[in-house]
Image (cartoon, rainbow, N blue to C red; front, top):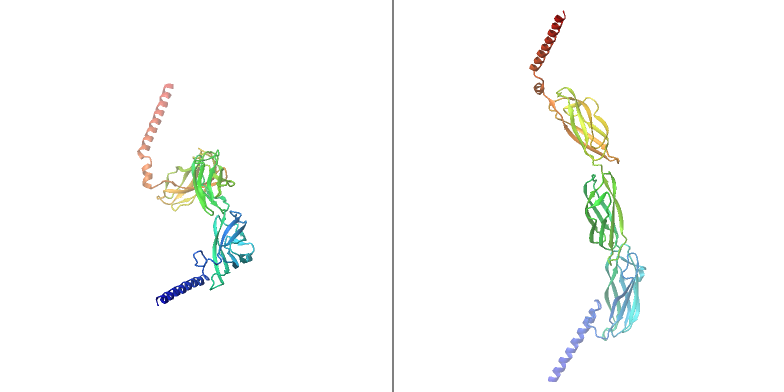
Length: 420
């Protein structure tokens, strides 16, 4: 009786174990094969890898060949093998139907080599890209389930190395004065497909524009990235013009290969530095409701000549211009001045200033303008009386004149008597 019970238990255990293996085999039909799958050793087992990429790394715009090595490590042949490469950007198959390749059989221990031919997008940037290779195959996986189909997926890593290309995108340079300092900003952009490393920006010394710092270093500029540089300069010239500033950019690619230097020449506008001082030179004793004259002076305090100087006065709300509102002076040399007269009619004793517009050119045709308020004085009746000469002063003058006249007549009479 005991032996009968023991044999029953052993029989049930074997049935349960066999049932577990069958269930695991069924699940793998819809899953991904791996070494952890509980297949018995007498089954096909394919593994695939990228054995070679030609060229390595690939360049943007080039053709690249992928050599795929697939080996059957199992103890049964794999049949009806299908490779499918899921090609994504930045790659394209040379022929779209080449995405799928087939093989009737791969025996135990055998290796099959398959090839895929791709083109790399010309705008592809440097980096490692992953493509999925799916492999489907059939074979005997179990004596109870003799013929199954399984699928595995392998990731293929493709290396692409782009080309850096640095360009001077923009130069923000203000107009500078003679013998002065200024700051300028420069934007450098990588319009290429690879990173630019060990970037050096040189500002070359010139006789007129001198950099405070000749070289700037940037560790890396990624594709599409813009680097901003700000630098100070000296203007070492007394000649107004647009002076060239040479710039050279040196850099390396990601494998530290030197790239062709980029050279530019930007123009620095240097103005004459003219400083025109507009002032009231003189004026009549203006009163409310009277016509008088004001004299406006223009002095050139700059380093070079101011050309085609023109003064303009507009009517105010408290005075009117009697004649034209514009005076053409012409050229004023440095450290020189000129004056012009305007006749005005004042309408109020509150009139305290006139607005003067001055325009002029430098020796290179650049036009400048200056607007300033010139103070003037309009006297009230009370102020005019206060500044008028006192009446007693006229009386003294008349008395002195009479005394002199009497002395003259007296002396003349004495001479006449003596002569008789």
